[in-house]
Image 1 (cartoon, rainbow, N blue to C red):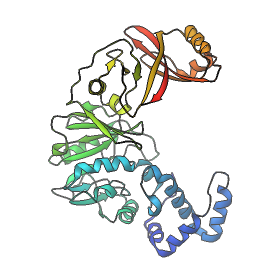
Image 2 (image 1 turned 90 degrees about the horizontal axis):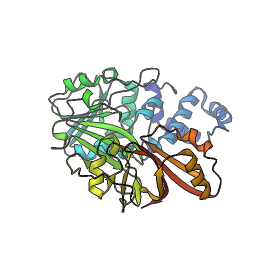
Image 3 (image 1 turned 180 degrees about the horizontal axis):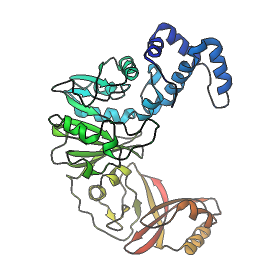
Image 4 (image 1 turned 45 degrees about the horizontal axis):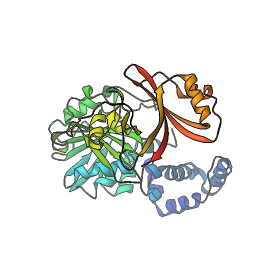
Length: 386
């Protein structure tokens, strides 16, 4: 659960003495090998304040994936775990440009950090006084203590991120168990434009009030679903997938685009669409955009002669009906010693299958195991960056 910060701790960490003490603790390695010795050294120099100082330094080091420049930030362990990655928060903030925005679950301010530069006005609220003190320090934004279900603004558009874990850290799956409950939040702000961050597995039937559901991935991992209402939702769009990459420009696909996608035999390439596209139910729309086809209308693998640019695609070397014995022989003939196994639509556990294939050799390959119609199919491929 991490160190239990208090408001007095936050005040100290913001003071000149606290900043100097943090700088001294930051010189320690604090690795798993040196941790005990480093903590002992911290106690000798900082006494009873050592625990909060060590925790703050460690959280700043962990925060690189969540905050663009966390060098001066203050965190709690729980707040950092729940925080939106900065690339996703920055992407979301663009829809609030020129608006008055109220982040009703602002926590330590990772969303406010990106709202403040683009919004006409950005304010935050939370019930936790420690997180509010940290948000004030981290962002300089105006924040107040308030219950998300008791509005303290009138005309601002709303951003909310309901907690999806209980006090013991266990994940909650039912929207009624979120804090605050999802439908209560929607009812309280039914006359406001709103964006609500949710887990990517949210069932659209549980949120009929959402005008647009956006699935967002970051560097290949699906991070969240964002529920948009009112004028924040895109007219004519109910589903959107947004793919954010550190190495290339982000892109998006929606259900307002054409979905004309044929079903064909395997072509030169296999394409495994980004998880956000799959979760959003936009595989056919993505395929239509890039001139691809499906191998099977119920399976997300795509095929074509030219893969989209900037992705990891799979050049087909051989394909046929899947049989474990035949696959083992094929891999042996090709000297494949390192094998990536991708599975969709067939009941195969890659971790169980791999040792049975008795891989030997210095070649590397990918095998795609799937179903085409009723036929289990293996496609031996070479993975390439396009």
